[in-house]
Length: 161
Image (cartoon, rainbow, N blue to C red; front, side):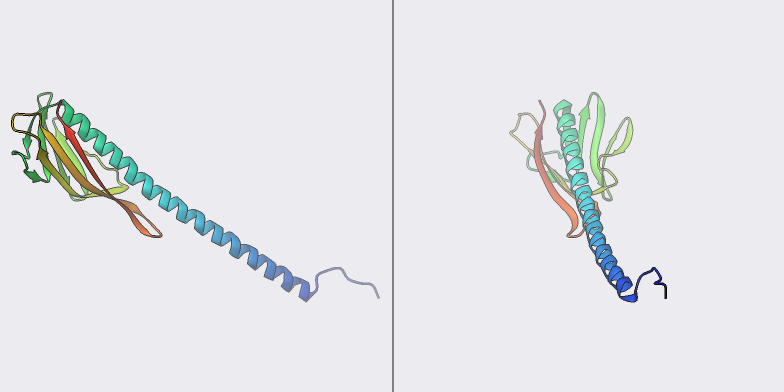
């Protein structure tokens, strides 16, 4: 009798078991990679938007010829109004977006990947001195990660030159 070539049932079961284990390990690795990517994207969007907003506020306040809101020393509010180069600049929240309204139009300063909340502007300084504004805001990532959204509160003080 001639022996036929092929696999036995035991060999097929061993092969299927090894393949199932291999696929399980690969799936776990893929899920871990996707989690790291989501976390990285969330952290990156919050940090990038925070740096941009802080730099833009510092730049505009330094160039301002006057700040009209908040109006008095120690006063705080959710709107910053100032004159830069003869144009009125107004920073305020519109929903979860920090908006700058000036003669060029309305611009969102945060990306679609983050949301702004808790925005306050407080006027600091001495009577007759240069205007100084303390800015506080919280950025929350729109991208969710395993541990939830990335949340970071920024506080900075900017002044006119």
